[in-house]
Each structure stands twice: as C-alpha cells, then as structure tokens.
Image (cartoon, rainbow, N blue to C red; front, side, top):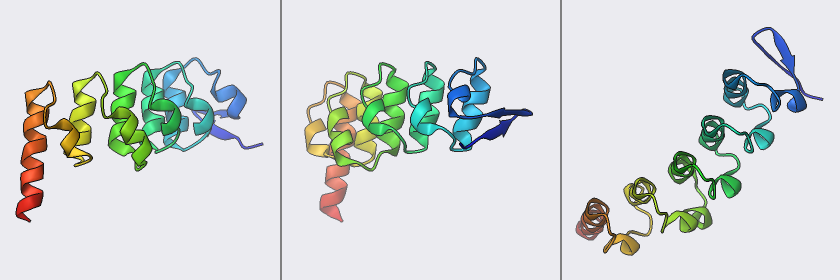
Length: 129
C-alpha cells in the first residue's frame, strides 16, 4: 500500500480522501497521489487541481462546477472530451476551446460575439498562412 507524508502525517488513499483539510488534499494532488480517488472530491478546487494533472477528464467533463470543466477544456488532449464541451452553457469554456483553435467553424455564430469574432479571426489567420 502506497503512503505519502504531508505535514508530518502519513496518509494512504483511504485516509487522504477522508482528510478534512483541503490544503492537505491539494498537496496530495500536487504530489500526484491518489488522483483517481480525489477526482471525486467534494471540493471543486481539488477536482480542478486533478484536472490540471490531466487525470479524470472523462469524469470531470460533466462536473457541475464550470471552473472544473474549464480546466478540463484547457488541459485535455482528448478530442471526444473537447466535443462534449463545444456547446457548454458557460461562455468562458467555449472561449477556451476557441483559443485552442479547436473546431472553429462551430463558433462562427456563437451567441457571445467575442467568441464568434475570435473564431472568425483564427480561421482567417489559418487561411492566410
């Protein structure tokens, strides 16, 4: 059984997920410990940190917290996951996907004018290059 030492205390996977202190769970994520368990953490901050480690995107893509989904949009390399986020209700997530240059044509008529304008600009830049 793997363990980790944080702030003078030893944790295994079962104890780290029960730890009350969020900073301890965040430190575990930073050290890439128990990521598959912490992907289900109650704290959106911890789930966001897990997404930054490129773990659990298939679960976190449907997270109720838009910040977690935005982190998934920024860090995923999986086209299927990006496809699930293309029509996200949160404009910030759509903006991240556009800035990554993914599926720009689907954003040409986005309800958010900045997203649509960015998509048009990036398409134009690709055509010029």
